[in-house]
Image (tube, rainbow, N blue to C red; front, side, top):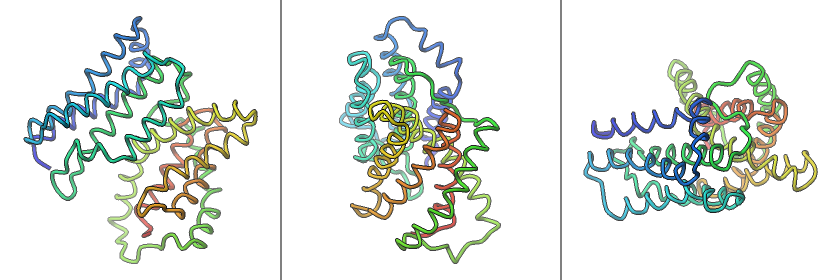
Length: 290
């Protein structure tokens, strides 16, 4: 990673962290004109890319135009279509699964994947749009779970481990790493857990459990059916990971999603599901080899 990318990372991290403060989200929601709200989100989506791309010499007119267009869709969607929530989630999934952010933010070194800048931008922009412009009831969006959310998340994690472990063994999905050095594995687990909790689990639990699960439960007129349907969809979006179609991963993701959804139901906030999600994903990343 070049030094030129560091200011972009620091700026994006600051903007991303702002989403976790309810007071800041309420100030944004207090902006009376939705068009002004969208304009604020669109303008703030671009500086981290410009700092990164200009500083590293990676800027192109095509990439900037593509990013500006994607950011405009994320920022102004609910201004133009206030009630069209399902399509918005499809757009977010399409952006993430297409890999377009990797082409806009080219990798500078083997371990310097700067596409995370685009992913953080997408999460923060969509979170502000959903909570501030669409004014969806807050499902507990935040970085720090409360004690009761930790308890609920840990309980569902304990339920998942024997079931998920048995399914993973039956599918021959993964094996324990034989080359683990525990003095390195434990710090790696902690770092991975925090990254998963604050980025991957936060965003995925927000979209799936915070938005989709309540809607499906309402449409299907059954919380249990909504939980199962959401978990199934959660599994299906994991099909492209690895060699498509990755059915083993999709099945395990669906089963895990069921327990993430149960954690959400227990507290009514996504932070409990985030705990379960981050623990499951961190164990897979650090201790297992698939």
